[in-house]
Length: 287
Ligand code: SAM
Image 1 (cartoon, rainbow, N blue to C red):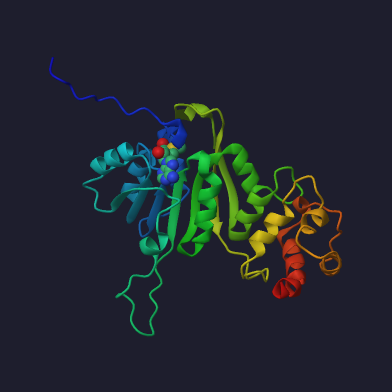
Image 2 (image 1 turned 45 degrees about the vertical axis):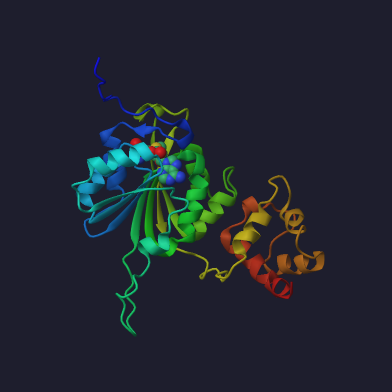
Protein backbone atom coordinates (compact mmCIF):
# COMPACT_ATOMS: atom_id res chain seq x y z
CA UNK A 1 0.00 0.00 0.00
CA UNK A 2 1.40 3.44 -0.87
CA UNK A 3 1.93 5.72 2.11
CA UNK A 4 -0.72 8.40 2.37
CA UNK A 5 0.32 11.66 4.00
CA UNK A 6 -1.72 12.24 7.14
CA UNK A 7 -4.09 15.17 6.98
CA UNK A 8 -4.79 14.91 10.69
CA UNK A 9 -3.83 17.82 12.84
CA UNK A 10 -0.95 17.23 15.27
CA UNK A 11 -1.99 16.21 18.76
CA UNK A 12 -2.07 19.03 21.27
CA UNK A 13 0.80 19.01 23.76
CA UNK A 14 -0.61 19.68 27.23
CA UNK A 15 2.90 20.40 28.53
CA UNK A 16 3.07 23.43 26.24
CA UNK A 17 -0.35 24.65 27.42
CA UNK A 18 -1.92 23.78 24.08
CA UNK A 19 -5.64 24.47 24.46
CA UNK A 20 -6.64 25.99 21.14
CA UNK A 21 -9.38 28.59 20.91
CA UNK A 22 -12.13 27.16 18.73
CA UNK A 23 -14.59 30.06 18.65
CA UNK A 24 -14.34 32.66 15.88
CA UNK A 25 -16.55 35.02 17.91
CA UNK A 26 -14.25 34.98 20.92
CA UNK A 27 -11.21 35.28 18.65
CA UNK A 28 -12.69 38.43 17.11
CA UNK A 29 -13.39 39.88 20.56
CA UNK A 30 -9.77 39.30 21.62
CA UNK A 31 -8.39 40.97 18.49
CA UNK A 32 -10.95 43.82 18.70
CA UNK A 33 -9.65 44.57 22.20
CA UNK A 34 -6.33 45.67 20.65
CA UNK A 35 -8.06 48.60 18.91
CA UNK A 36 -6.92 49.87 15.52
CA UNK A 37 -3.68 48.07 14.57
CA UNK A 38 -3.60 49.08 10.90
CA UNK A 39 -0.51 51.23 11.50
CA UNK A 40 1.00 49.14 14.25
CA UNK A 41 3.30 46.21 14.91
CA UNK A 42 1.68 43.39 16.89
CA UNK A 43 3.55 40.65 18.76
CA UNK A 44 1.51 37.46 19.10
CA UNK A 45 2.63 35.03 21.78
CA UNK A 46 1.88 31.35 21.12
CA UNK A 47 -0.15 31.54 17.86
CA UNK A 48 -0.79 27.79 17.95
CA UNK A 49 -3.08 26.84 15.05
CA UNK A 50 -3.46 30.49 14.11
CA UNK A 51 -7.04 31.45 14.96
CA UNK A 52 -5.95 34.89 16.23
CA UNK A 53 -3.14 35.07 13.68
CA UNK A 54 -5.56 34.90 10.73
CA UNK A 55 -7.48 37.93 11.99
CA UNK A 56 -4.35 39.83 12.92
CA UNK A 57 -2.74 39.18 9.54
CA UNK A 58 -5.66 41.02 7.93
CA UNK A 59 -5.59 43.94 10.34
CA UNK A 60 -2.03 44.68 11.51
CA UNK A 61 0.60 46.58 9.58
CA UNK A 62 3.17 44.07 10.82
CA UNK A 63 2.65 40.87 12.81
CA UNK A 64 5.37 38.92 14.59
CA UNK A 65 4.14 35.57 15.89
CA UNK A 66 6.37 33.57 18.27
CA UNK A 67 5.58 29.85 18.57
CA UNK A 68 7.69 27.32 20.46
CA UNK A 69 6.22 24.18 18.91
CA UNK A 70 8.26 23.28 15.83
CA UNK A 71 5.40 21.57 13.96
CA UNK A 72 2.94 24.39 14.61
CA UNK A 73 5.53 27.02 13.65
CA UNK A 74 6.19 25.21 10.36
CA UNK A 75 2.45 24.98 9.63
CA UNK A 76 2.01 28.68 10.37
CA UNK A 77 4.90 29.54 8.04
CA UNK A 78 3.17 27.59 5.28
CA UNK A 79 -0.19 29.17 5.99
CA UNK A 80 1.08 32.75 6.14
CA UNK A 81 3.96 32.40 3.68
CA UNK A 82 2.26 34.73 1.21
CA UNK A 83 1.36 37.36 3.80
CA UNK A 84 4.20 39.87 3.59
CA UNK A 85 3.26 41.56 6.86
CA UNK A 86 3.53 38.31 8.87
CA UNK A 87 6.71 36.91 10.37
CA UNK A 88 6.56 33.58 12.20
CA UNK A 89 9.40 32.99 14.63
CA UNK A 90 9.92 29.50 15.96
CA UNK A 91 11.18 30.21 19.46
CA UNK A 92 10.62 30.61 23.17
CA UNK A 93 8.99 33.92 24.07
CA UNK A 94 11.00 33.84 27.30
CA UNK A 95 14.23 33.88 25.31
CA UNK A 96 13.41 36.13 22.34
CA UNK A 97 15.77 39.09 22.07
CA UNK A 98 13.30 41.99 22.22
CA UNK A 99 16.11 44.55 21.94
CA UNK A 100 17.13 43.39 18.49
CA UNK A 101 13.51 42.80 17.43
CA UNK A 102 12.06 46.13 18.57
CA UNK A 103 14.99 48.35 19.57
CA UNK A 104 16.40 51.21 17.47
CA UNK A 105 18.18 49.94 14.36
CA UNK A 106 21.82 50.99 13.95
CA UNK A 107 22.30 53.11 10.85
CA UNK A 108 18.77 54.50 10.91
CA UNK A 109 19.39 57.20 13.50
CA UNK A 110 21.29 60.37 12.68
CA UNK A 111 23.51 62.38 15.04
CA UNK A 112 21.33 64.44 17.36
CA UNK A 113 18.11 62.81 16.16
CA UNK A 114 16.76 59.85 18.09
CA UNK A 115 14.29 57.81 16.07
CA UNK A 116 12.00 56.27 18.66
CA UNK A 117 10.28 53.18 17.27
CA UNK A 118 6.49 53.08 17.67
CA UNK A 119 5.37 50.96 20.61
CA UNK A 120 4.26 47.42 19.88
CA UNK A 121 0.93 45.86 20.91
CA UNK A 122 1.06 42.37 22.39
CA UNK A 123 -1.63 39.72 22.16
CA UNK A 124 -1.82 36.09 23.14
CA UNK A 125 -3.82 33.25 24.54
CA UNK A 126 -0.89 32.55 26.84
CA UNK A 127 0.46 29.11 27.68
CA UNK A 128 -0.79 29.05 31.27
CA UNK A 129 2.20 27.18 32.72
CA UNK A 130 4.41 30.25 32.23
CA UNK A 131 1.94 33.17 32.50
CA UNK A 132 3.83 34.96 35.31
CA UNK A 133 7.22 34.49 33.64
CA UNK A 134 5.89 35.91 30.37
CA UNK A 135 4.36 38.91 32.13
CA UNK A 136 7.54 39.64 34.08
CA UNK A 137 9.53 39.50 30.85
CA UNK A 138 7.10 41.81 29.04
CA UNK A 139 7.30 44.26 31.95
CA UNK A 140 11.09 44.12 31.88
CA UNK A 141 10.96 45.25 28.25
CA UNK A 142 7.87 47.46 28.73
CA UNK A 143 9.56 50.39 26.98
CA UNK A 144 8.77 48.60 23.70
CA UNK A 145 5.07 47.98 24.41
CA UNK A 146 1.99 50.10 25.01
CA UNK A 147 -0.73 47.54 25.55
CA UNK A 148 -1.10 43.82 26.15
CA UNK A 149 -4.30 41.88 25.47
CA UNK A 150 -3.77 38.52 27.13
CA UNK A 151 -5.88 35.49 27.86
CA UNK A 152 -4.97 33.80 31.13
CA UNK A 153 -6.51 31.37 33.62
CA UNK A 154 -9.42 33.14 35.38
CA UNK A 155 -7.90 32.78 38.85
CA UNK A 156 -4.62 34.32 37.63
CA UNK A 157 -6.54 37.19 36.00
CA UNK A 158 -8.26 37.81 39.34
CA UNK A 159 -4.86 38.03 41.02
CA UNK A 160 -3.42 40.36 38.39
CA UNK A 161 -6.40 42.73 38.66
CA UNK A 162 -6.92 42.49 42.46
CA UNK A 163 -6.96 45.59 44.65
CA UNK A 164 -5.05 45.87 47.96
CA UNK A 165 -6.91 44.37 50.90
CA UNK A 166 -8.71 41.78 48.76
CA UNK A 167 -8.21 38.04 49.03
CA UNK A 168 -6.34 37.82 45.71
CA UNK A 169 -3.94 40.76 46.11
CA UNK A 170 -0.27 39.77 46.20
CA UNK A 171 3.09 40.01 44.45
CA UNK A 172 1.62 39.41 40.97
CA UNK A 173 -1.01 42.16 41.41
CA UNK A 174 1.51 44.66 42.79
CA UNK A 175 4.05 43.98 40.02
CA UNK A 176 1.46 44.18 37.23
CA UNK A 177 -0.03 47.38 38.61
CA UNK A 178 3.42 48.91 38.94
CA UNK A 179 3.71 48.70 35.16
CA UNK A 180 0.20 48.86 33.80
CA UNK A 181 -3.46 49.73 34.22
CA UNK A 182 -5.39 46.46 34.27
CA UNK A 183 -8.87 45.93 32.78
CA UNK A 184 -10.79 42.66 33.07
CA UNK A 185 -12.57 42.33 29.70
CA UNK A 186 -14.43 38.99 29.57
CA UNK A 187 -14.33 35.34 30.63
CA UNK A 188 -14.55 32.23 28.43
CA UNK A 189 -15.80 28.76 29.41
CA UNK A 190 -13.61 25.66 28.94
CA UNK A 191 -15.85 24.62 26.01
CA UNK A 192 -14.47 27.48 23.88
CA UNK A 193 -11.19 25.50 23.52
CA UNK A 194 -9.99 22.27 21.98
CA UNK A 195 -9.13 20.29 24.02
CA UNK A 196 -11.10 21.98 26.82
CA UNK A 197 -8.95 22.97 29.80
CA UNK A 198 -10.10 22.32 33.39
CA UNK A 199 -10.39 26.04 34.09
CA UNK A 200 -12.15 29.17 32.81
CA UNK A 201 -10.07 31.75 30.95
CA UNK A 202 -10.19 35.54 31.22
CA UNK A 203 -9.07 38.20 28.78
CA UNK A 204 -7.28 41.18 30.31
CA UNK A 205 -6.07 44.40 28.75
CA UNK A 206 -2.96 45.88 30.35
CA UNK A 207 -2.22 49.42 29.26
CA UNK A 208 1.41 50.13 29.98
CA UNK A 209 1.65 53.01 32.44
CA UNK A 210 4.82 52.67 34.52
CA UNK A 211 4.36 54.00 38.06
CA UNK A 212 7.91 53.76 39.38
CA UNK A 213 9.00 57.32 38.63
CA UNK A 214 5.73 58.74 39.96
CA UNK A 215 6.23 56.73 43.15
CA UNK A 216 9.88 57.77 43.49
CA UNK A 217 11.17 54.19 43.22
CA UNK A 218 12.63 54.23 39.72
CA UNK A 219 15.96 52.55 40.53
CA UNK A 220 16.59 48.89 41.19
CA UNK A 221 15.45 47.27 44.37
CA UNK A 222 11.74 48.06 44.67
CA UNK A 223 10.62 44.77 43.13
CA UNK A 224 12.91 42.90 45.53
CA UNK A 225 11.46 44.96 48.37
CA UNK A 226 7.91 43.99 47.33
CA UNK A 227 8.96 40.34 47.11
CA UNK A 228 10.34 40.54 50.66
CA UNK A 229 7.17 42.32 51.92
CA UNK A 230 4.94 39.58 50.49
CA UNK A 231 7.49 36.88 51.43
CA UNK A 232 5.34 34.78 53.74
CA UNK A 233 1.61 35.32 53.38
CA UNK A 234 0.73 34.70 57.00
CA UNK A 235 3.44 36.94 58.43
CA UNK A 236 3.04 40.62 59.26
CA UNK A 237 4.90 43.21 57.21
CA UNK A 238 7.24 43.72 60.15
CA UNK A 239 8.18 40.04 60.35
CA UNK A 240 8.79 39.81 56.61
CA UNK A 241 10.89 42.99 56.42
CA UNK A 242 12.77 42.11 59.60
CA UNK A 243 14.55 39.38 57.64
CA UNK A 244 16.60 42.11 55.93
CA UNK A 245 16.28 45.36 57.86
CA UNK A 246 17.52 46.51 61.24
CA UNK A 247 14.67 46.85 63.78
CA UNK A 248 15.28 50.49 64.72
CA UNK A 249 15.61 51.57 61.13
CA UNK A 250 12.46 49.69 60.18
CA UNK A 251 10.53 51.26 63.06
CA UNK A 252 11.60 54.74 61.94
CA UNK A 253 10.72 54.05 58.26
CA UNK A 254 7.28 52.61 59.07
CA UNK A 255 6.52 55.58 61.32
CA UNK A 256 7.65 57.99 58.59
CA UNK A 257 5.37 56.24 56.08
CA UNK A 258 2.56 56.13 58.68
CA UNK A 259 2.20 52.35 58.43
CA UNK A 260 1.54 50.09 61.45
CA UNK A 261 4.11 47.27 61.79
CA UNK A 262 1.31 44.77 62.41
CA UNK A 263 -0.32 45.12 58.97
CA UNK A 264 0.18 42.58 56.19
CA UNK A 265 1.69 43.65 52.87
CA UNK A 266 -1.50 42.48 51.11
CA UNK A 267 -3.36 45.47 52.57
CA UNK A 268 -0.89 48.14 51.43
CA UNK A 269 -1.33 50.32 48.35
CA UNK A 270 1.65 50.70 46.05
CA UNK A 271 1.95 54.29 47.31
CA UNK A 272 2.37 53.09 50.91
CA UNK A 273 4.87 50.36 49.97
CA UNK A 274 6.84 52.95 48.00
CA UNK A 275 6.77 55.35 50.97
CA UNK A 276 8.30 52.68 53.24
CA UNK A 277 10.89 51.80 50.60
CA UNK A 278 11.86 55.47 50.18
CA UNK A 279 12.12 55.91 53.94
CA UNK A 280 14.45 52.89 54.12
CA UNK A 281 16.64 54.11 51.29
CA UNK A 282 19.37 55.76 53.41
CA UNK A 283 19.95 52.37 55.07
CA UNK A 284 19.94 50.60 51.71
CA UNK A 285 22.51 53.02 50.31
CA UNK A 286 24.85 52.18 53.21
CA UNK A 287 24.45 48.41 52.88
N1 SAM B 1 -3.17 31.25 20.20
C1 SAM B 1 -3.63 29.91 20.01
C2 SAM B 1 -5.12 29.82 20.25
O1 SAM B 1 -5.66 30.77 20.87
O2 SAM B 1 -5.73 28.85 19.85
C3 SAM B 1 -2.89 28.91 20.89
C4 SAM B 1 -2.95 29.18 22.36
S1 SAM B 1 -2.30 27.87 23.39
C5 SAM B 1 -3.11 28.25 24.92
C6 SAM B 1 -0.64 28.41 23.77
C7 SAM B 1 0.35 28.35 22.64
O3 SAM B 1 1.61 28.80 23.12
C8 SAM B 1 0.58 26.96 22.09
O4 SAM B 1 0.55 27.00 20.69
C9 SAM B 1 2.00 26.59 22.57
O5 SAM B 1 2.68 25.70 21.70
C10 SAM B 1 2.65 27.94 22.62
N2 SAM B 1 3.78 28.04 23.56
C11 SAM B 1 3.98 27.33 24.70
N3 SAM B 1 5.10 27.73 25.32
C12 SAM B 1 5.62 28.74 24.56
C13 SAM B 1 6.79 29.54 24.66
N4 SAM B 1 7.64 29.42 25.70
N5 SAM B 1 7.04 30.46 23.68
C14 SAM B 1 6.18 30.59 22.64
N6 SAM B 1 5.06 29.86 22.49
C15 SAM B 1 4.77 28.94 23.43
